[in-house]
Length: 250
Length: 268
Image (cartoon, rainbow over all chains, first blue to last red; front, side, top):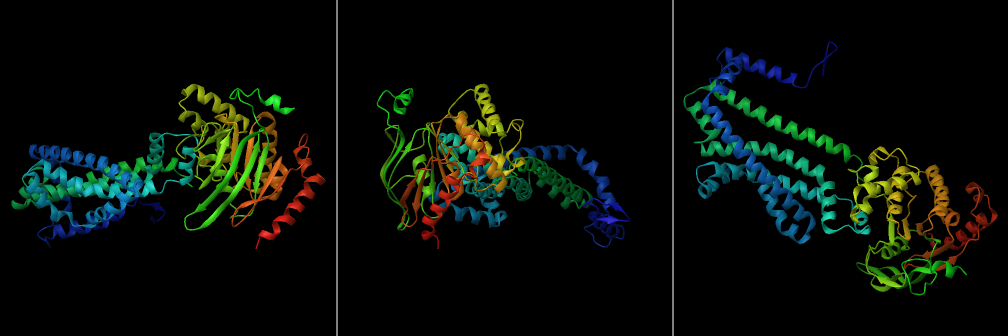
């Protein structure tokens, strides 16, 4: 967008909403919305507390563990689905069901199985992220050029060398899946902790909302927002580099 | 005769026939009952360039892929140097119609791929790949990626990759069909020059009569549905000297007309 010849960054659109938020807050129109400026001022307070650091640590550990598991299992499952037609026919429907199912409803079940702690959160992150990674990996594997595989066969490539070629040629799709998994994983870690609600940011959310510390509540939401966007941006950059090499897939 | 010269081939102590590849009674039926190839008997002579020529649907690419070991025939046998084969082998290398380059790898790595899967050490295989990259006229492009090259240049990489493994037989599946006319002509001329340096057996699949006559020592014409050998022609064209002169050669022009008259019947 350009205003009087100046190029505005895309984020400028947010300014309008922030302004609206500030007005609503200043005039105390809605109880739930403290002024945006106060939320910003609360940010360092939230970031500085020991309980936030502890919550952040638990969140990060369970997020990264769950996501790591999801990437390993998702890529393996997708590869399996893409390579073995019979397996694909059996598994595909289930993967699609889990992908579109309201997973939040499953969290109580997970809680019964894994207890009221970090394992439940890890499994929740895993469940949120793994299916899209598997499906995208599958798509990438099926997208592998048949003539590239014939080429590998004709030069006598071994099974492992061919598998490597399949993985490399599916890499753009795999990374797209991981990027979506990264974002879904953040949902998973927040929803998991909210439902368990005695650990991590979930506990903080309960604490803030029960004591009606709305500025702190919103500050925490902002932090999570930036965390998710930052991660997605990171994978995005990686993807752009891979796309560059995969630019001419025919 | 030239048989005595060919016994110098280190691979064989047994008597060597002029045929490096024998195709014996090949039948191929695709899913359903599409007969792609019916009872094909052919011999490909050492050091010659043989074209498989025919309209689309005559099974010429299928035949080439069966010889390459990429497809299984329903019956019949392919023999290389007298030995039956049932899969790809080091004595045969393939050049693909759509180039089949790895988009994530540089020209150098692509050209060295065949040597890489054979387990050759990195420095050695890169040396050899560099040699063939310059032989096909791509010197200076070693570190480029396929998408930075034109179609013709990509096919040159495919050719360098096939040359680098030093196979006896080079099989080319419509190698020039995906590049533009000017590039194709230049490529054809370079191929004639290349044949003088690399004494190899070539099998070329093409649907272009001009291309087949221009390049081949022997043209095998296939007719469609079911694919079978309809005629074999051996052009007697002197290809020494100026490659452009061949295109004005009367022998060349007459043969093109003759083959076209023959094939016309199969084109609807």
